[in-house]
Length: 513
Image 1 (tube, rainbow, N blue to C red):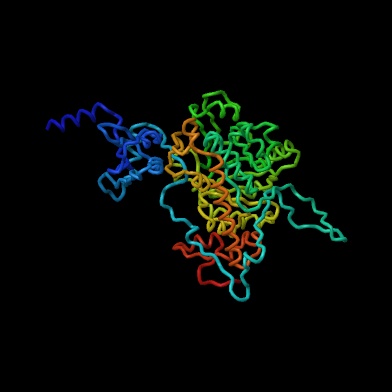
Image 2 (cartoon, helix red, strand yellow; image 1 turned 135 degrees about the vertical axis):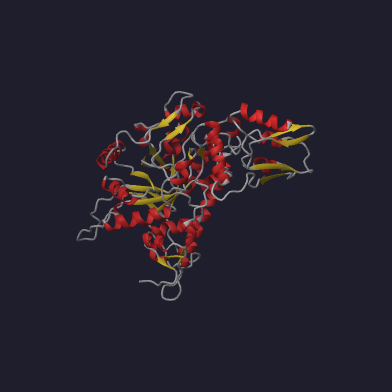
């Protein structure tokens, strides 16, 4: 009775209740008490007491302590459901309810959604060449993977002498159909963004700057930067626009369609303040809409303004989230003069977003690419624009399928961050990243070596490009351009035939023609 009275008194006098941990560090007897794990844990989970290392509350499974332990004495255990089982109110639902009852606020999270939606990529199989369409050996024959980002000329017009008389648009050539997605300085550290830019330069591809502008130290990478003009217009000025390879108007983001951006003031350090051109320590808020865009005509005006600002020397594109009416929106953007369109699927990553939007708003990138490619083709617009697509491109297989669905270029971001050390613990918004990636704390930023990070990203994407050549050869295709929108080389094996119909893909067992 005494214990029950104590518990009852605690619950009555405390409105913030403890939520059970999901992860727990286990330390074996081989621990030599070097305390390195305590130093490396940026979430203050481990402590030394009574002659041993003990775990406290709050482990996010970032694995930093495991990686740095010299004796391999630490294991992170996923704690099974600790609440009573219930078929409707799952542990996830109840954790969310308890968290909001404690805080009274919107639940935030990072990365892409962690809900177990079926991946359509996993329900698609690729074709392979056999007799009448022989394979191409990539070791002995050239398979071209170069592509361009920018305005396409459409149908070429030739003079009687055979010279091209069509007006050629501006574009950026890349050695592979991959660009690094937008990730701003603020969402990630100085060292992390530098590593991404270094990798893009070595691979001869584009890297997105995010909506935070470009730090002066990174101007040397200008020929490989795809700048972003978001609703907050952070860091946007004529000098910024002219010192990049391409300009992209951000209308929406896959992880938070219809939502703006928010970088808390505690993350706005001197570097962020200088780059974004905002006061030190103040919140950086991007409005939900662009307050000068309320129609396709308004978008057309901004595109024209930006093209004028860059002297028509760089392509100007539009980034939109994959939403239900994405095909019509993309069509309008092309008619407004966009040189390239970027589609961002709802599994795409982010440094911070309301969980309700991340988990439940938007549509998969697989569907968005297919319907946009078909709409633009039907309207005679497809050959005027470059179509880029991202939002959880996890592997070279996903990349190949995205291209076959209709994209010219795929955007990769989370995979690149994983290559640099990210463990996808979904805690970016807390700013305590143990790997020095999603943080502005100087002691943590210094943990990431930009040179090492860049080299790992280079190796990853180089491997993907080699695998692209392997599958193109197996399909009897000698150029990635010939795969773009070639949905007849895909077959669907999933359980929902309607998805295949919407995407214009045949079912396994159906032949060509």
